Length: 146
Image 1 (spheres, rainbow, N blue to C red):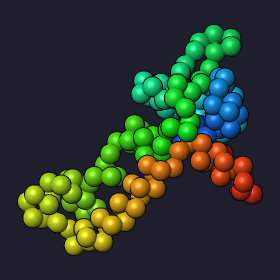
Image 2 (cartoon, one colour):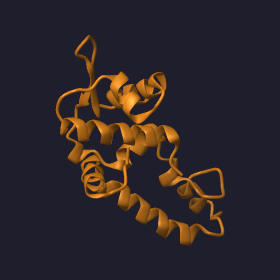
Image 3 (cartoon, rainbow, N blue to C red):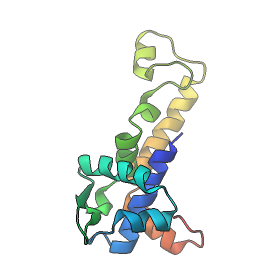
């Protein structure tokens, strides 16, 4: 459903928000080490978030990544859209096209009606859940999110 790349991006944002309270920066080596993720791969993900104005990136001995946008205003939907694209939210489960195009051609798949309702709930959940929500949930839970 969500790619590992996207999961790593979300984990990195939650980590960054939990360690900096949304301000300050953390270098890529620290994030990579603490999340046990490959440094070059994580760097590409975070640079994608920089290009989309979610994060700032600074170079140098005190450089690292910090938030360009308030974690309270960064939805999971936005991160998924940036990293994975909108296919999860638009494409048919069975056909290799968007549900809109399938609907226009009257070629809806056999589970379209049922899945459409589920997809709407998923979209709602992802739009309403922010990075800050995930940080708070992780703090209140016995489970380690990172």
